[in-house]
Length: 238
Image (cartoon, rainbow, N blue to C red; front, side, top):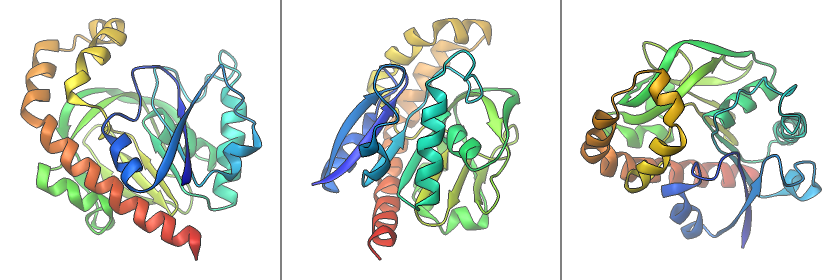
């Protein structure tokens, strides 16, 4: 089987609905716990796929969380060697930073279900599958980043210019969440309780929107990931 290394920063932000897609694509997915496991391990550099998940810390917080430095070095190596790499939320921010772009606080927190606006390149990318869900996704971030040199912007929102980007066929960065399992949303609500309270987020609306959009986002997100995996692995094999 192909190897997928999944870097997890907090337990409840896992592969979620992406897990069965990886399994169907023939990947043996293994979690590596940031801050605990060795992110400088050579096997991470050579894995067929690396997925970097989200988390409540900042991509520029290495003075507080030193493990971010070997994580960035790993991503720099993956970029240099053109190995398939997917970043979600914090993961996308780390990829952007590893590619030389700046990461910083956004204009406002963006939390809850809402649409993205695809660029013309986004409409012809794997994200085209999101059209069937009216481009709805789950947003959950406060930071943002500049578009890395050589990257293609795939989607934006009114608050966040860079919601998704691609580098070649081998790198995909998603600021938003397509992987969050709506059936397990309570884990997110509990884990991010302080952030939700400080941002005055309406939790009852989050729950109702998860019931309204969750199934659509799951289906379209899984199809988008499947399309990207096909393209990325084909490029890696050529």
